[in-house]
Length: 251
Image (tube, rainbow, N blue to C red; front, top):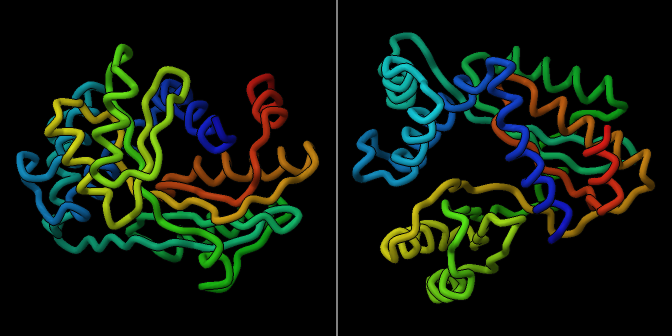
């Protein structure tokens, strides 16, 4: 398993910690809002991603009114509220490239918070386009169930155009080209598989390997960025080695 896949596994385990910090409803609400916007529909029966987001919200006991508010936010039903999606570009210690996806109702606040985190970590924000060229958008899908037949999933996903299928510590993850993301997701659903996670995310074209301490500085920067309320996702081109993962898990 590659380092970034291991990092995805660690973040899944950290979901319980987010709940303890009381931040889970904020994250779930944003997932719902993004699903409505990306699927161009507020009807979960015609928007598979929204259906998944709502199911997650309900399983975490998110109040119905919070779910409805998140949907209204996406379609502009909350009077006077404008929500912007922004991707900030930056550099961490030793020049590691970062992309930070943000959803916010206050761009000045978000910019100030992201800039503060970069600066404190010894990094900096970068001008638009100076970092993004090092990444490409990829589809990422995980399936529910612990006894799935890997070979069967692989065949369904590959025939629909997936780039790769991996077993990430018992969780089957499917990677797709951006343009075939929806087609692969639909093929898996029609084959009877239940989607757990489904998103487009940034993947580095080439990774940068650093000494352990420098790598950990960048991983801490990523964690601090992910802690910001307006931040949806963070990607970097850092090569996350087994040594880095071990150090993070024991920290």
